[in-house]
Length: 95
Image 1 (cartoon, rainbow, N blue to C red):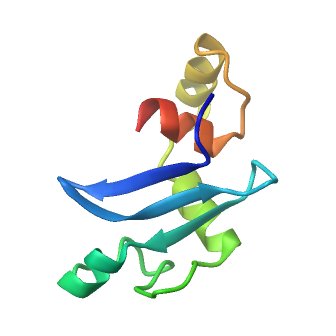
Image 2 (cartoon, rainbow, N blue to C red; image 1 turned 180 degrees about the horizontal axis):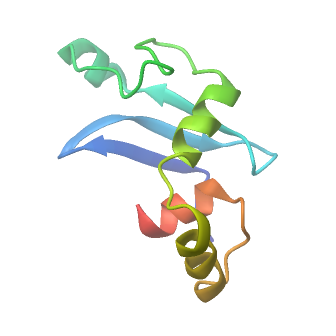
């Protein structure tokens, strides 16, 4: 079983945490306090540096756009027996 939390890293540094909500199609990203204190950059203009949860729509959209598209996405999800549209599970299994 996959956890409902994923660490988002840049190199060896933890940038934040991605959390799957009760509706698995919705994700929330939050920057790690140590990342904020270090003055590290935001990961996207749509996810500005903040100590609070990022909006669900922006978090979900940003991470969904990190996945492959089209046939490559479909082939991977079918081969790995993953539901299509489950961004969190894809990222948990493939980084």
